[in-house]
Length: 473
Picture 1: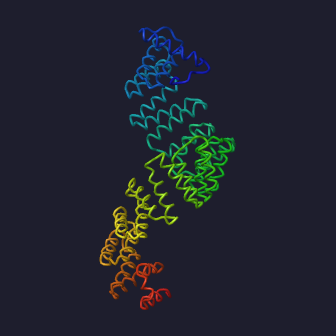
Picture 2: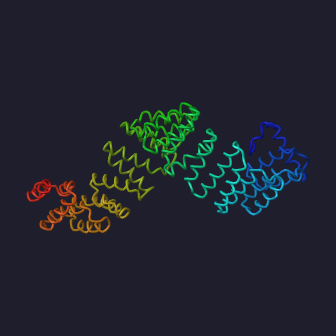
Picture 3: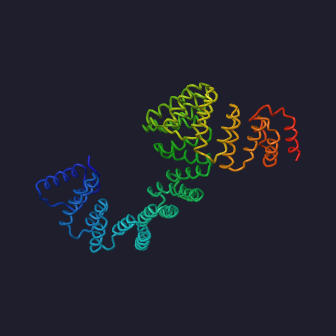
């Protein structure tokens, strides 16, 4: 009902509600009676939790009037000023708090946050390092986590990893550190160090499911999917309600070509009342892997129902239709995917290929040309369009295309093969054989491109003798 739960050690829920009602009644009458210190703390937290910062500030001011030697309410006012982005006033409030309680760690932690907000990261870190020397071992993890916050804001993610690692070596079950360290591991690709760390944590407590989870993520980062699956299975055994572990395990099973196991995991997530478009998309992928194309489309459509702009789901529906040779239906799905993401190379390529199969050659040409415009340094786009232009007999345009390709990607021997085939088709044999000889010398293994580009060349005796000559080298 309220913005923050009461402290169960001091006050119960009904008493908490009465405190708030009594305070608000007094505020309405523009007078504030006596409240216990812990009651004022609850009142301030209540308004802060509801994001009513002005009321929280007023309550903190009233509290300080009644408890003028309490640093807590000055710190609280500093926090509220920080939330209101009145940084200088927050610093001043902390100075006043230090007079009352110079050894309070929270004052220094908040100072560090304020320095970080102003971009003074090195000063913030210097301050926290001083604090680390003053606190006991039990307080140290909180200070180190504050230090990780600063490094994260500073985008020094390697330091984030090392600081959170220190926290976990002191306090292996620190939930915040366990939840946050994975991002630093992934950004810095410290998968090996993460494996070593989390194995230590598991050795000290085999039921540390977050350590198992991070271990699985690290194995996945290294491409060790069998080990990743094993670690994630331990997570699901220890914590049967860990939906992210089931989701990650499902994705790993897909990587391992185990679609039924993936489906089982996705189903467990749905049983937890967790409906996400990615879950239904994954179930579609699993069914597609099993050849259940109709069922796959059903799940892709469920994903689209949750996210009408899910272009990958439209594309996969098209792919499933294509696998059933329902090319016209596939085209409609590809069009929907391209409407949402018109510059997607994979979508354009598939749309062009299916257009070609259906006889819409000009439409295919336009798609392949767009791919080249989007990725002018990718030779595959030029090769794809070259084959089509040869089929259409557009050999003079093809020569121009290959010259453009050479400028963009350099003199790749495959381009020489393509141009040589085009010249042979036009009867320019001497010029063609010079290019083909150069291509054979640079990259013999790709000579079949000649026959892909112009199949009659497979019967050209002069060309075959030339290829045999290089084959013997």
